[in-house]
Image (cartoon, rainbow over all chains, first blue to last red; front, side, top):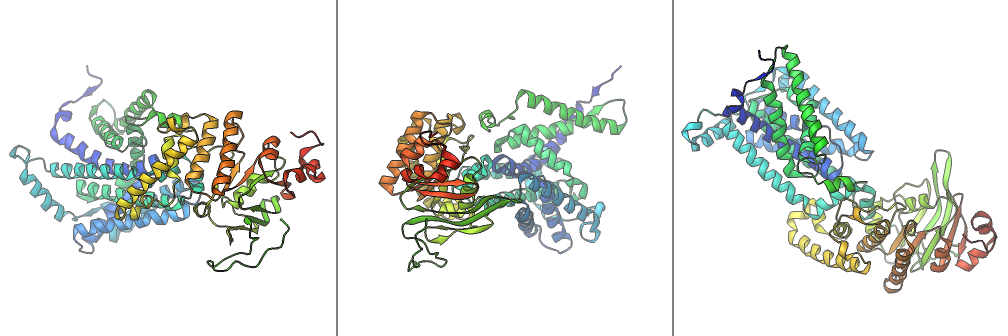
Length: 319
Length: 278
């Protein structure tokens, strides 16, 4: 009699790990933006899923409805996301930190509701298709360079491109953080009045921080769209921002390297728990996945409160 | 200060305000209300260039609120603040700091999760690497400036006896050392007017004496002006050359220590009976 049986076959399959890897990479890029905001600037952006939606939809709509090339549409989507970030920040960043948090989560939900309802533009809940021809050509080219034994792994090129992007962006963010600009951000995180008293325009720095996070969210949005070859509103629910925050805590606050590690662990947990085989209704199994993920997180926070790569000192000294 | 304002000084940028020639700061009829309560109720005084001026008064007199309005951390409801010949009333705090008016806080704001040296280099002005748009375009200039700033930061840490703590997190310093760090950091910002909110609070006497020595040295050597809030009357009487006394949001007396000590209004409002200086 088996009460709890996990089929390990799925976990040894290459396509499972490629799928996990792509999602982890997408969310690593997504969470780099959260790390900049939360870990290094001290502003709570709860609307990162909204910026991801803007990235995905701007790219998709410009290609499908306006006939743009995918590459130009990608560039435009960054500009649109950054503009949205500045527009949300302008009124709400002057206020206390919690107002900004509320404004961003409201913004992300507005974006999602627009995506559901503006059917002529977004396809509504039916989704948006047919924007990725240019990518499929690139994907085939990359696959052509790879050995014959992996030719059936059609997501492998996306995995490679996503993780190259993760590597480049992580490196860039680490470099940026080490400049005097990054030092001002850290000071704002510590005490914005102290930064102000030393002549730093705190408001302008916060706007820059949110604009860059929005750009990172948009890039994550491209890859999420290419992964599914399909854009639909439910991919941008607030839940996904919270998954980003979980990755942040897992990897450790104020560590860009931790983001990639946190994303890998989180998506391995989220995807592997799909294969739990219990004599229960499907929706109960779905709920149980999150129970297991939650337990794993509680364990981590209990055993290593600073996250995997976070600095314990910075956490303890924060008074 | 009651002396009449002189005619505008010639040859300057636009909103030049009339100001007594020896004053670096003038507070004119400043009012700040919280709801119906006027925390500052028409306070007026001036700070002479190169002076060490103390701002004293009982708790709730409005001293810290006045600091906040003068330095742009809070918006006043009426009045004017003239700094270095220009009206700065309502200007943002960061802009005033860049013009050389730098403050400290009653509760030290050492950036605890940052190393001491980063606390120092952060404060340096004119760093092109702090602007995201010039960061790349002017990378060599930023690196050059960073080297200058580091040299200056280490000099100041040496002067303030914090050299061996340069790489430690600021949060590991004692309360007194944090006060010293805060003053050293203010100096990195190249100020002309320094406003200190209770610099001696929570500092042991040895470190406190060092802080006062630094203040005098900076005034003598660099002509820096200090305005400080303080409750320790020995420090106030012994180290300031002018005293401004506030009570209930108004300035009730202003003058040198001997005159203020003898002023009946000050004795009634704050000092208590003669001989009983607190």
